[in-house]
Image (cartoon, rainbow, N blue to C red; front, side, top):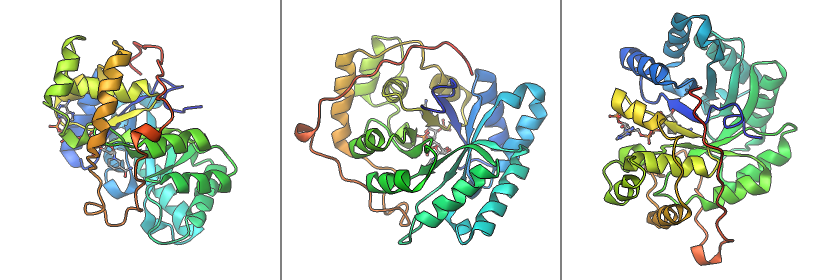
Length: 296
Ligand SMILES: NC(=O)c1ccc[n+]([C@@H]2O[C@H](COP(=O)([O-])OP(=O)(O)OC[C@H]3O[C@@H](n4cnc5c(N)ncnc54)[C@H](OP(=O)(O)O)[C@@H]3O)[C@@H](O)[C@H]2O)c1
């Protein structure tokens, strides 16, 4: 089960680090092009802008799909965790979110208490689904064994310039699907000739090729942009299908191992998995999700 792809919410609008009027304007553009799934977090301090925006759209925005994340500063106790989620719901102006995540594994601490509090949030009806973010393959196993319900997602950095094969293996082993953030390597993919060249055959840009490659793996895609042109382009990725040989060309680029959220960038991150050498890996699987023209 994939709570994003199964509900046609595999294209998710990311909101970090946007706030205030910049976020409001980006949300207007995202909504206009068809985005109905939005990703936020307590740490982004922008949940109220999203709640206010969706309230201003009116009843037709009731179908919006919301993911938010609890920050580690609120992992201290069940009471602290749950009251922080209640505040998130107030800011988002909903009774429950679609997906509630723990944003990071706590640094050097047991991950089990925060997972227990996350389950309590689910039991209280604060979320339809729960999941994790920035968990390593080993942590995915610990989480899957500890939590009594299926975890809906592990939201991680995922794009064609990083080899996240250990996490893909972890997803297969544990049944916890991945979703991708920094899907365009925070802009680093834009203008790269290898992607542009592949895109020409489909009448698409290099960034659309990169996002399509992620979707074709069955992985929902989160992208953020403040430009209408880029927002529209990032959404317009479901009407073409990359050939097996183009997928293989892109797979080869993962060897670059360009990580946006490095340990220098995020010293609180866990020790990231190191990739398995390509020659020792099982043959790549090529999934072809049905192309969808649905805007929601
Ligand atoms: N769970 C976590 O720990 C975590 C960590 C990081 C991010 N996230 C989530 O994932 C979302 C996306 O990640 P991200 O914002 O870091 O990275 P991203 O989507 O890979 O990149 C965003 C950057 O790329 C540019 N861009 C977007 N579309 C483009 C296009 N079509 N052509 C050229 N440039 C383009 C944007 O600039 P313009 O504004 O000029 O378009 C922006 O500077 C975040 O907003 C957040 O919701 C989660």
